[in-house]
Length: 264
Image 1 (cartoon, rainbow, N blue to C red):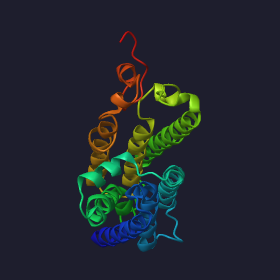
Image 2: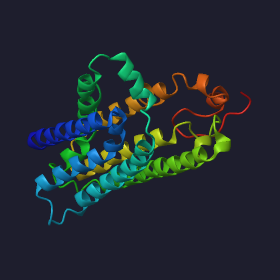
Image 3: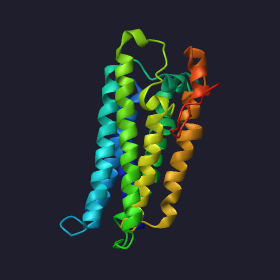
Image 4: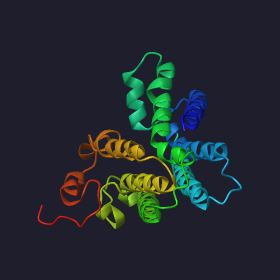
């Protein structure tokens, strides 16, 4: 198991360094977002190939690879369209660039790219260790719940992103707040979807043989989504930039889906 973790760590570092070099050519660190999902696909693919499972009857592990691939490629395609169609740097990375001058080009390697590579490797622990685990065939119920959560998460991410893209494409909505569809149930259906996907993948990975201690991966991922780089960071000043967002906060759950609150 230690071998597969070290091998995938080396791949994650090599991968983000290549993306960093591309960012230097393009002058934009925000491109890392487009490579986030595909990075997991590469890590899972390498772990799968190194496990010697290919050609065996381990359909559960083959299905695990398919689950990661569907999620990662969908996210990668979605973010690639958004990132590469906009010539401007994402405001989060632009703020970092201003804060960490001079020599941001070099500092960005550690602050943005290597950090995200390490997080990517850490979050993928349940998947990578599953490929190095036992037969895991006595936990069908856990695996089924994992598939269900993964499906719910993929639905919220995909539909939420499509609803937001359609909303933004209409010039009449400029400056307005999307509060219909899944966005009426949670202010961040894409973040909730990511949360559900990775808890689902953890449960399915455990059913395939991943050790229980890998629960630290989805737990830390959830903490980041809710308290660090997800909801908290995005909403830090959004009410100042978008009229009506304060009312949206009062009426709609921040993360977990639920009915709108009335009378606020």
